[in-house]
Structure formats: C-alpha cells, structure tokens
Length: 192
Image 1 (cartoon, rainbow, N blue to C red):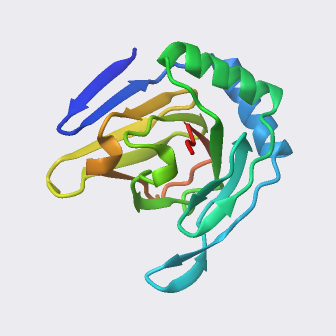
Image 2 (cartoon, one colour):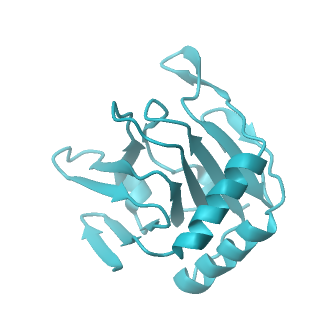
C-alpha cells in the first residue's frame, strides 16, 4: 500500500508494489545481463577510489555528479515503458535514468543529496528498486536526530520531492548480510 511521509522539509512517497512482480523480475534480468555497467573512480576527501557500485546512464541528456560526467545510452524499450508508467502515475517528467548495480552487501552509496544545479530547484527523484531488498536511510542535514529508514522492496517506488534534497541526505549503507544483487533506477529531469 502506498504511503506518504511528510517529514520536516521533505516529502516522500513509498509504494512497495509499484511494479508487477513478473515485470520487475524480467526488467532486473534484462538490465543485469544486457547493460554495459561501468565502475567510475571518485574522489572522497582528496583520495581517489573506485565507486563501490556499478553505474549506467540511460536517457536524453548527459549528467554530472562528483566530478563524473556520464553520457547516456538510449532508453531500451522496457525502460521507456517504465518511464511512461512513472510519468503517468506521478504527473512528473523524466529525461534520464541513472542506474546503479549493487553486486552484493559491500556495494553501497554514501551520504549525499541529489542537489546538482542541473536537476532544478526542487528535484523530483523517482527511485525504482529491482532484485534484492536493501535498507535505505535518510537524515536531516542540520537536525541530525531527524531520521527515516525504509526497506526498499523489489518492484518498489520511492519518490523524493519538494525541498527534500535541500534539507535531507540519504544513503544505501553496506551490510554484512549476504544479499543478492540489486539494481536501483533513479529517474530524474535534467534541465538547461
């Protein structure tokens, strides 16, 4: 059942059953096996290291974050169908999808906000989870006691809208549990 979370200075919508299970499973298998995944170097506190995940950009525009510029591949038919479903369901428009492959529990995404200028003033981020479920954390940037956690189920949608990216950061932490691969599809609108 879809839930809305109106946190201080944030608006989130979580729908654990956004995708039909068969569609989610087939999309995971297609993307897992047919995508040219890459692992980019990233600088953290002045030290260069490889990102602890694999990525690929689909869509109509290039996208830059953390001194990485990604050039997109066209949306495959299945992702275009998903984009249309998202746009119809959310009344938002998306022109890129940043795909992240987390191979196991040691792959992760550190604390960050999707606040790049090219995403606009109040970005809408639509995040689809495929494959293994993983824990997702949010924390207010200045009021550290304000926190929220989600278990992101396969086929789920997490929408982050409004001022969320201004005031909150989020992460997908490492886990010592043995977990199967997970793909996260984050749909965004890149503006000029």
